[in-house]
Image (cartoon, rainbow, N blue to C red):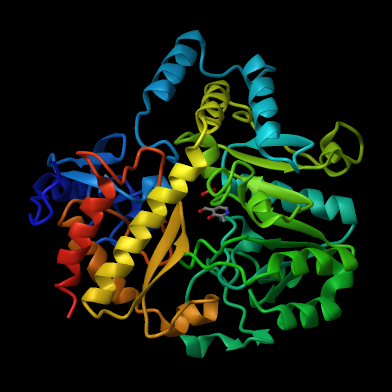
Length: 450
Ligand SMILES: Cc1ncc(COP(=O)(O)O)c(C=O)c1O
């Protein structure tokens, strides 16, 4: 049982982290896992089962980060363990045509109605990269529109204003300051990027009036998941689709976070918006690295071999073991009540959190619904966009709060830009009630905030 009061011994985590400095940059393989986010350093995780993880010192946690949302069935689901070990025994990958990839493609199409066809990649970043290339080839246009605060992976042209910054750096919403997220990207790459504020219909209409005719695509996250969890205003995604089509641009819905999470067909099904292209990753692979681009044949067929094709190679594309996992994952997800349960457990957690903050008179908003949400310490009633996030959210307080939770058996990233994830392994009833443990720990952590 997770004890909610203990401050954990992290001796082994610290030792591993010190040792890691010799071989890994900052001791990790992605800055979001290291000392930039965790103080004084990361908790080194050793194993997981269901909704729980254990660290190198044997401490147990309920995991609400779930590999940034990849682990839709939690850790080491027995069906997936068997699928992987059976597939491994037969050969992990052939880089050749396999029945596994054909079956994975068929399962995918049953879930995602806009997928006349699908192309599997290895990560979400590769999927968005491919989607943009397809859109450019299809329209014969070079530029594309991205929104402030949206993250679409680490491909050069997407790395503009994906990080948060102090409000005074942001410029005017109608003419946002353009802030690259990385060194090493030629500034000319960003000449093809039109930047706009999100969730603001009038601003989008103005930008599309000016630039629509030159855009290959508008790319958006349907729910902003990299500034926490920010929902689209009513009708906003539909309007974005209309404006894109009116100007001959494609709408790329980046469902890398939201896909297979809110509904079988992702946010496009939940909100009733049919994009031209959509991208997937994370939950699709249930813990294995994969991405996907889905859409109509008229666009995806551009990858057919010809003099004028859109090139997409990859040794590990359609990785056999991963394809087997996709089919098993989607089979598990198609069990009756899966999505109703994901929503119910998430909504119970959200209600419990709101109750704690209300009782303790802490100014906080718990935003989102069902399988994904985020806590913002803010005086505002809601966070509607990137600028709200940069201006009004106390991300430092959130980090302190999550560190207090880590000491109380709840595993989560202290980065406010990410989000809490509910998997099919989480429970809100029974002896191992994850939601109850969360609320108990939050209640105690909240008392440390003043
Ligand atoms: C919306 C979105 N798109 C794309 C990506 C990139 O996916 P990956 O990390 O698998 O490359 C991410 C990753 O967090 C994401 O949040």
